[in-house]
Amino acid sequence: MIMVMSDALAPLFRDASLRSFPAGGSLFRMGDAIVSMFLLRAGRADLVRHSGAGVRMILHRAGPGQVLAEASAWSDNYHCDAVAAEDSVVAVLPRLEFRRRLLAEPPLAQLWMQRLARSVQDARLRAEIRSLPRLADRLDAWLGEGNRMPDRGRWQEVAAELGVTREALYRELARRRVDRRRA
Amino acid sequence: MIMVMSDALAPLFRDASLRSFPAGGSLFRMGDAIVSMFLLRAGRADLVRHSGAGVRMILHRAGPGQVLAEASAWSDNYHCDAVAAEDSVVAVLPRLEFRRRLLAEPPLAQLWMQRLARSVQDARLRAEIRSLPRLADRLDAWLGEGNRMPDRGRWQEVAAELGVTREALYRELARRRVDRRRA
DNA sequence: CGGCGTTTTGAGAGAGCTCAACATCGGTGG
DNA sequence: CCACCGATGTTGAGCTCTCTCAAAACGCCG
Image (cartoon, rainbow over the protein chains, first blue to last red):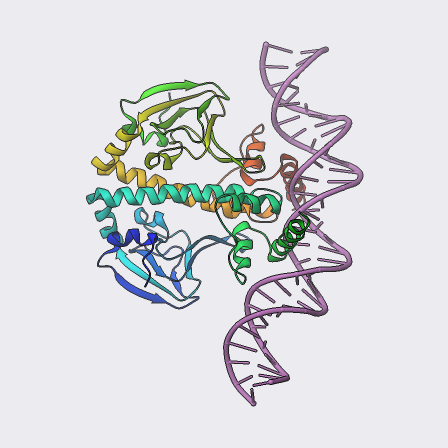
């Protein structure tokens, strides 16, 4: 297994038990009592919330090394659902132990606060990018943040990230291909 | 002066000096070295970032009781500009002292982590709301989160929050008025 | 009253969404 | 090897919605 920067939280989840979820499996549901914190070890998991008129919103797609539902550490009930988007493995640590370690070990607290602050930055930026009216501007802003187009077969993920349909993104990419050929 | 819930961070900024900024004044600019943390005491301040093609994005509009640029505590240079949107007063605390207090006083650390986690939640939800294609859905989702329409004279702020033009919001509101009159 | 900002409404253009058809690619199984 | 299948990529046409520009009605305050 490859060690990546995103394993930085491993010390916080030392001695945590591992649990596997098949794609589509539910990690928790809105309203459930919060007993544990989850660190995604492999796979992907979505935080999903349903708005009044049945509109399904994916609040966050977590990848390996990320903790799900950061706010759940200090809350008693979940405010959204969590679903495995792929076959996934998570480290599970009791919520109270998670909190105890954060408050007892300043290095971990510092790491956690850095993580949270970074997540705030990212989420705010994403909100602003998505509020740009034109797709071209969204793509420019997104690419301008150091993001790069993934390999073929994963372009739809970019469309989702930008909050547009895949057709719209395909058209924009085609437009840029011919524009680049002209230049 | 009225004491509100948002004064919870006051202990963290005890002994901090106060500084005033006129509307339009600059608190800091992208690239500046970070020496202090800012807690907004009165007024409003915007975090502004400029994307490549000159697109101006307001990452966050902070109000009284909020700390500006949370991530700056652990960073050496600002990643965005901060501008006073109104005449404002801020408490200024050296960044290293801010960090020292967080790591030395677990109750403050806990409060700070709760704040950050809540900000993550809020920002992610805002990003999802803004990615809804139809304004009606955005308004529904926003109202569904416990938000309420402010008094007349501040509806434009809601339009900005939803990421639409004020005209579009006015039209939607007019539509709902007649719809409600029919029902 | 006379500004100034907000709210309201109109008309046209532009952009994305929806539905639809089709191409392409990788894998599966006959 | 080839037929088939599903998912992804590509392109077209029409519709809907928002944006933009514009004009006017309010509402507040000096």
